[in-house]
Amino acid sequence: MKLTWVCYHSIEGVENMLVMTAPIIDRRAVLFHKILIEESVTTYYQPIVSLKTGAVMGYEALSRGPQNTEFYSPTEMIKAAHDYGKLWELEMLFRQKALERAVEISPEKYLFINVDPDIIKDDNFKTGLTKECLNAIGISEKAIVFEITERTSINDYVSFQVVLDHYRNQGYKIAIDDVGSGYSGLKTINEVRPDFIKIDMDLIRNIDKDAFKQALLKAFVDTAIKTNIKLIAEGIETKEELKTLILLGVHAGQGYYLQKPSPKFEDLELAVIKRIEDYNKISTNLNAYAQDYHYISNLVNSHKHCTFESMIEAQTVKQHLEKENLNSACICEHDYPVGLVMKHNIDSKLSGRYGYSLYSNRPVSKIMNTTPLMVDSYTPISVVAKRAMERSDEELFDDIIVTKASKYLGIVSMKKIFEYTLMFEKNNAKEHNPLSGLPGNPIIKRVMSDLVTYKNNSCICYLDINDFKIYNDVYGFESGDNMIRFLAQLIQDVVKKIFPFSSFIGHVGGDDFIMIIDGETKEYHQVLQNILDEFERNKIFLFSDKHIMNNKIVSEDRFGVMREFPLTKLSIAGIAGDLSKYRTSEALSEALAALKKEIKQNSESSFKIIMK
Image 1 (cartoon, rainbow, N blue to C red):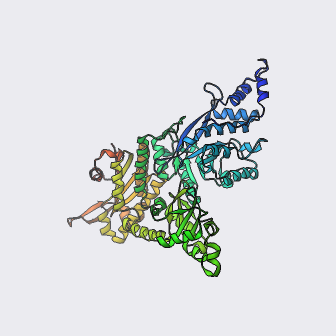
Image 2 (spheres, rainbow, N blue to C red):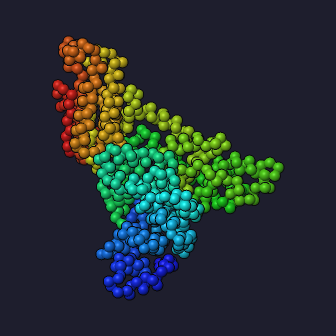
Image 3 (cartoon, helix red, strand yellow):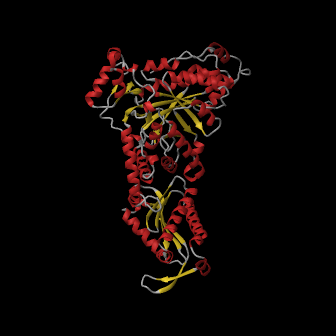
């Protein structure tokens, strides 16, 4: 399809420039204006991928100039556009080329188009050109996301907000690009309140090896979840970066590892989709004990609910709710929710002396709630519950609309949320060790099953206190419990400093713990040495002065014979590498047990890691 927008207002002057004598010609200006005249811009499309499912949720349109010229880079073209006062013309050419093939995109996918905020300063700024184009090719404005690309700072937020409101009122979505780099900072996010935040690749690069970057991104993830903003990580180039982003809960991503830009709308390779699915399965069990990873989509029952358009008569909606014994109905336009009708509200409106005659034949839009609570399908249930309880008393127990890619997915009642909360607390108590509060054997078994099922480089460690029974016999069970709680907290404190978001700690029972960490070999050795050092440094507070001075305990062994024992030591057995080489979790457990037995022969606190 060929689209033509009349955007160029000085073509005659450009043509005159082209015939000027060579010494006077600004070669760069001539080449740039020739690009505008001949529309010699090519658009590539890079998939933006859900890191929950591996599905392509949209494409970013990336413009390129003529190959083998200085203007192949869009950045150079934009610089020239600023220099020659042709920013609006170039932006419209980029947009025209991006939309020419947009009709080929599946209706449920987004098209991300870059917008330079400086266009608001252009005298040629007009409204409605994009809408006209979309109407011509039959695409909804709701499928378009404008990426605000800050190449310079935004000085006039008031005027800028007018432009954004103009786009939003037409149904477009807004994204902030390159967050974490240059001018794209917190002020812009706060002023714009975007639908999407795209994290700059500088923050993503080697994030699997950088705990500080992980902490920064986790803060963005938590904020995005609470504000219903979708987070997109740019520039993913390795499987390790991908895995870390999934463990952190990032919504979506793009980058060469997932798929390179292409003139066509490419899907992901099956191997990449499989890896995303595997990493999500690992993430699910690693975080099974955390409410942050229990999503509202799990509570949706979309089969019982149907949607209505806003112009349908109110009595028709009421009759449907009564017939199907439903409490609510979602009102949609082209699958996008625009309101909610609760049964008790419609009953109230249609009751009384004049209520039925006033409202029964009127559109349901006249009585629906136009600002119901709407959440994305990957919003944690705990976050939804908190937001629901913050509503006014009149809406406190209204149902909640759940969306996927902004389209209607289903409805969740407050009753379901209350039931989930009670069940979670019950299961949480059942699956966690009551002494340490750490995940117990049910979760540990699922996590270890993942380690041997999915190809994945990790380090699993078994931690055990030597001669713990002797300490228990001498100091009593209460002191023994204190030592176990002390070790549980110590492990968490040390591990979270190096692996804040890529670790798992479980309590097998008694004085035995399991720890799983993802990183590099040198980091594995560092964290285990730190655990031993902290244990040796602080264990003196658990012993009497006499035992500390003598550096030993006299007690009966398991055969009833009095003998001397060294003060309690800590043994750590670790296996690192591709743990899927073990056929079963039981085989992995046996290998850990054999290694632990070997290490416990040492007279001092020690660890050993073997590589697979």
